[in-house]
Length: 332
Image: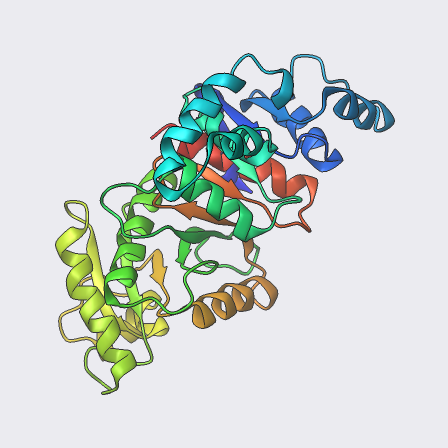
């Protein structure tokens, strides 16, 4: 994957520390070994050191220079308990509850990130998405400029039949079911920032709908139009936004020329914002299954620091890709 190779080179130029909450999982251990050997990042495995050693030995994986953090024995535990209690006491958390939660590998990993003992955090091979996102919200926190956390898919169109080869951002395909106009605008702005971090091109944002430039009238269309107006006010300087727009007019120059009188993008969008989770989830899976796109994600966006989610069905490759992407995110 040529595009992903460029991400690997960026990560290698300044290796970051990525903490993995499910350090006892063989997939996590194997991916951490590969990432370390490839010079992409420094990995920290959270879990019971004896169990991590046993799993690694059974898989004939040499842990070597990979750091292991066992929460109960960590030099950081007391300070993490203090910080967690400070963060959550206004929500009714007792000190005893903070002491218990800080021992949980997921909370411990996110507390490492909050304390700047790591640059990025990954979980989800065993934890549910709900657990992972909840921990990120409570411990890592949301950027002040956003109302909520959303997600994106990094879509790589690099198969032989793809013309041109390109990388795109699809959002939100994993979290917010039915965003209101303000949330949809947040998703668009966050996705534009994600594109600035990851793509080798300027973000060009399309707010997708079944209507293009006033061709239909419906409350669903009104939502996208309003979200477009809000997004334009908050976009990074120079980022262009098209909306409301149908998919073909967003990505095919000839169609854009026919359907949009004064196009912002001329059919060149590389960031696609779906109006709801139904459309986003279906859209990325159509591109993946019928179009042979390579998909990395969902990747969380809108957080203070990179804290990402794996699927419980993830492969070693999936973990490897997400560690790399998280390392690049943490470069800022």
